[in-house]
Image (tube, rainbow over all chains, first blue to last red; front, top):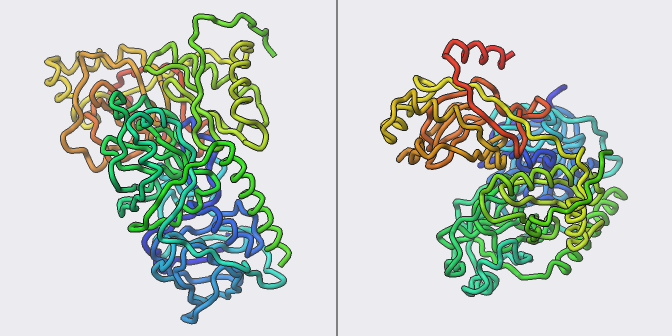
Length: 316
Length: 241
């Protein structure tokens, strides 16, 4: 397949991601996938792709990329700017590029992760049903690793758009994030100590030690019940679980782990996980408690909003 | 389908459930690392998968719990809990495969197991005795996780328990077999690590191009068979092809 993009410089961390790899969690293969799946989906819809196509996930600082074919691209997510051959272009909109064009993104001014979609999708080989890069397992993406200068990326079959597309609104990411969460699975280990109430009343700050494995938070220690041990017999974990290790500093698990050995006090709603992808070191985070029933209603509403957004963009 | 077994086992403690977000339920069959509890988890994972219920997206078993990922648009957690109880009470025997035993060839000591002597010294044993004790046990794969294909094994002989390295290695080769405290395990992929390395298997334990990508499943039995360095290189050559 002919290459469509050449990486000139990757920025801080550049990986290929799609919606994730779901068939082998029982064998220790984590989901991986775009951390802000909302921005990822919109980028794809803007160039006429299905949401499941692979995009480039850019972290904190953006890449420089040479275009090798005529195609439509779109950049969404964190505001890293967007320059085509040195002139500024609109984000959250489709952009026609020609061979020899150079795209450049800078430091994220707002948010943490940006997404670049290409018509036809980034066509690295599918591994176990997904093109997402799992850095810990060295699989998916391009040779299971982050992208580097000189890498060539192929595009899948795609068509040029009849008319340019843009999202009529662009999310502005806050520096103080409210994340709705359901108590549990191990909330009872924190209920008598007052830890559960304190957890939902505390403003935490995001640590620079965060990565795709987990968002590490710091604040007053979340205390477990006097009779609760630090570790638990390892259990399956899901994206959004908030672990409380021995030091009481929460770790919000993202998409790179399947089993964990620490008690989880709460779980962020699936409908709010995309927001977590935009939390950058130094930002503050507070968890807002919702019931399971309310959480499932909010999740259903969010899926409805995504479907409406897709229809809007497809209509042009 | 197979014959239904309608006699519920009244000796089993009732399953409990924990909520893990808006799309997953954790079924809890016990609180301890126990082969009987883990066997119940293995059976349940097989029964849930065999049910092919449209609302169930995935089942992930661990030591004494399993996660059921579900579509909340199709089922609510209370109904899902009932479904799991019902699947167990009316278990379809044919849905549960017998526990498989997987044999992993290991070349112990030398360049493949640089810490074999440390494990021997720590426990006041000869190196050969460490190999004998490590390879005569049939281990249970309680869970697979932490890394793709990494198995949590139970059953290490207390006579060869050994603390982790004080300073972890920056790179442990794929296939390395190690001991950390009361645990033994195999590194399926090259990674940093602090386990005492006593040997290495020439088998590629995780190969994402292969179906299935790992040669065992949660709940299987696993044993180690000592091999010579010559056999190691021969098997490694076959594994490459």
